[in-house]
Amino acid sequence: MRRLINYFIRGLVVTAPLALTLYVCWYVFHWVDQWLGLSIPGAGFVITVALITLIGVLASSLVARGAVSAMDRALQRLPFVRLVYGSTRDFLNAFVGEKRRFNKPVLLAIAPGDQVHMLGFVTAESVDVLGLTGYVAVYLPQSYGFSGNLLIVPSTRVRPLAADSADVLAFIVSGGVSGSLKSGQGKTRTDTAET
Image (cartoon, rainbow, N blue to C red; front, side):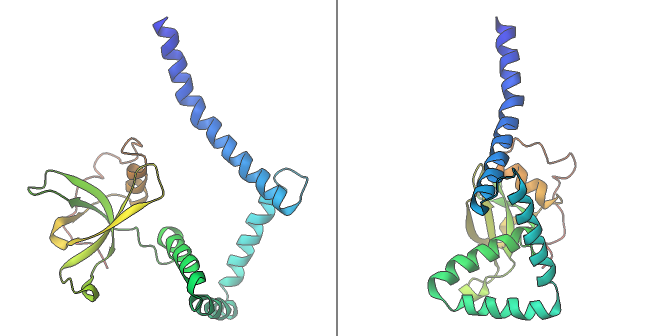
């Protein structure tokens, strides 16, 4: 009986993530198709991806860059729109844009004696504008969520990690169970994080 229970649990571990992934993909495809009023399954998703890619191509041209900059400045002047638009733009740029900000993984000592640490990313090398010389801004993503905390800490409390940023983020978000940090990548670097 115990062996059957173990088989069931192992099957659940394999099946549940796959089923959830397939359901989320199906839901997104279905929602986009309904939103665009298309009856061909998946056509809305393909059209949306193609349209976003086309906008990316157009936005890369010199002429369109000026238009995008003008639109950006106009949206930054509207009070509530500025908050939503600016936050979304900065968040996406931090992960996938030309100005990636989550590219400096660090180990943050949060307790005296360096016995307790947190993984995070340096997002600002200097916060002198806040009157805090010698401090850095460290973003700490939370496990199993899309939120996190921003801490302002003395630069002496952080150590850069010689690990891939994407692997560190996956490790944090998964609560440390992703196993994506490969042996040898977790060693700390002796050099300082690049600006």
